[in-house]
Length: 243
Image (cartoon, rainbow, N blue to C red; front, side, top):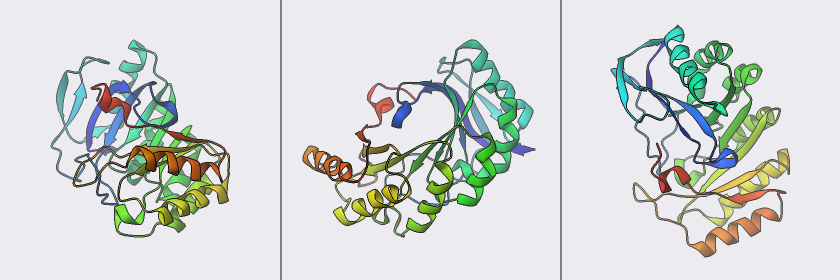
């Protein structure tokens, strides 16, 4: 099995419940959504080569021709894991669940936890990956961001993912409406009030404007009326210059 990859590197998890943990990141091509605040170039078929970090934390990259075999990808990742203890291997994108078969085949070759960073809209793919997945970081994508309502897919996805160590992230911008925010909160509460709910203030890009400090606090207060664990965590890797 072969796959086009964008990059493989070792860095610090900058978002969500595992912020600050050392992870290997495997970035895959393609996404089924188009979010206004997306800051990642991930178009399918546009990467003739994969950028592979020369050594864990070196921040120097080799251009390796795509596609890469399972054996090649596993070899790079295992090299990082043997050099430095890592908390997990994070599959990200784009949307990694578009590549569920590849991840399912690769995961048994890796000697650490499997972490999925996903937009939470592909429950069928999540079901395939349940046997090999340890941690799920699920984004809720609001209609103001994607231009479409994804509530039913998110609900179905979260009901599956709650079998694992799961948390939900929601990006808050100036454009986020109270109605859609509360619908997201109530969706999570309807599945499990104990699932951690991370409010991530948007890093402004593509015309998205930052939410005010008052709005962030108000959202957290409103969320805590329904959920047991609501935290505010920005994209910390961007604050400290990490990849």
